[in-house]
Length: 278
View 1: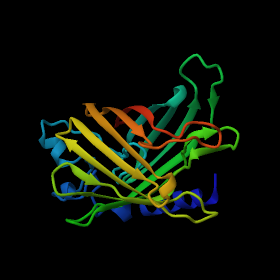
View 2 (view 1 turned 45 degrees about the vertical axis):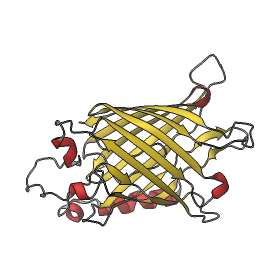
View 3 (view 1 turned 90 degrees about the vertical axis):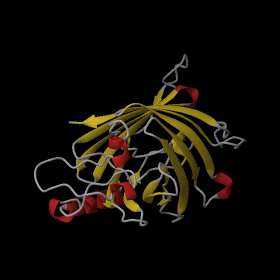
View 4 (view 1 turned 180 degrees about the vertical axis):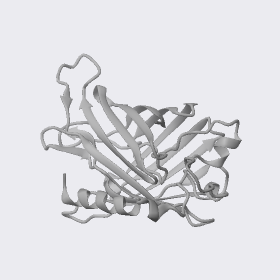
């Protein structure tokens, strides 16, 4: 594992110690909805679910820790878990697992398997990657919540060049803020995925939640690299509070091919996510 990743885990472990977070409530998907009364001292578990989820029919949704490709500031509850299976082009499957190991801190791992579904016999398992996210600020009024993290998972592996055509996100800083109408949130972020060039990339995602039943998602990713930036869009269906289905399109309007001959154009993806608590 790179030394930078080890340093990141060490820092978030220090910040997530009980003394560092005893005075703050664990974060939810947005800052303004989290500004209610703080929980009383005691052994009861702190929840990061938004208030509107509890008020709208008692659905109590698990947090949306990411949209299609981009992260949000939401984290799983302490002792929470989530597993996500992503089905992408050419029968590929990308599996994510993540855990709430401390208050505010999630860690996880992912495994990419190309051509797993279908009649193609050339199935390939790619090296696993790690993820981590630490929510260090819950937001206050018009100040957004904020989180830092690392994501080592890329998309669309090039077996010849031994790299992903869509580079991993790397180290990122993300903010989440509810905008002018209830349920509409922005999740802008910046990230560094290549420390050789020190290039800084950004993303401008939006999500619109309709009464905790469906959520519209829009992303403009890699905005600092105009020729390789991507526009993604999708729909999330909350089947149950802990079971979500995603349907999306990545790279809307793109054309041409990557260096390995794979099409650069729009890609349809579907995701199945289940989350809960131990």
